[in-house]
Image (tube, rainbow, N blue to C red; front, side, top):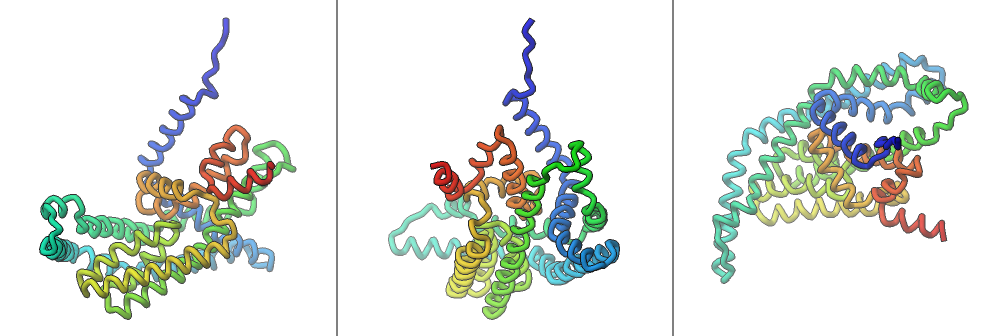
Length: 349
């Protein structure tokens, strides 16, 4: 009798994927802090290993890094917590003011012969919903920044185990000479991306803060931190950060000031995103623009606002892992950029 094996069935693999995603979404309360701790550990591991090579005891090095992370976390909370509360409290006023501006703009257009059904247009393209969405996102990020006990605890344990992790992998594969190139590639790729992105995001946040503060826009520190965080999302992160800030500038200071605010975001996005980052990162993150957008939507749906911020590193890790096997290499190529595919074709020819 012929035995049919379903182990390699695409349907079984898809079902397993759906179950894993559903489990992650259900357990997001635990998964999100764990992922934050993992990525913090990836960023902090090189400084820890450097201190160990200089003779600094491991526990002292972990303590130094822990204090540094706590200081940054407290700084962010101090800068944005009150601004988030004030902005959320003023949302009804901003939304009402934005509706009035929308009606006035449509009436001006109607005087020049451009006719619209005002109520339907406002209902379909209601910009006040953006402010509500921004408030919810900011509150979610604020909650993550303040509830970090589990993140720090996991962070300490991961760093304390970091030095012995390669030996554990060799023990799993029953070979002390096991090639850990795939795991090293994942960590090195994510580490390089997060390190460079942190520096460029910091520059973006500072410039946006100064630009909006000079204009007199409300909550410039909050918008600077928002631009800093969302700049981790390539291509569209700066646009997402710009929309609510420009809308608030329109409500508060008028169309001309809103245009100047939009110009500031555009200049920073071009200089940092299109000039500085490509030169520093070389070939870039190796993901297509479509994949970046879809990963933003997917991880945001599964893990919330933190999933949006970690969408690119998570997708990069998946892409590198898929490239390690011939059976899944085609998926890695699909996730990659067109430029990467062209380079591969040139090497084969």
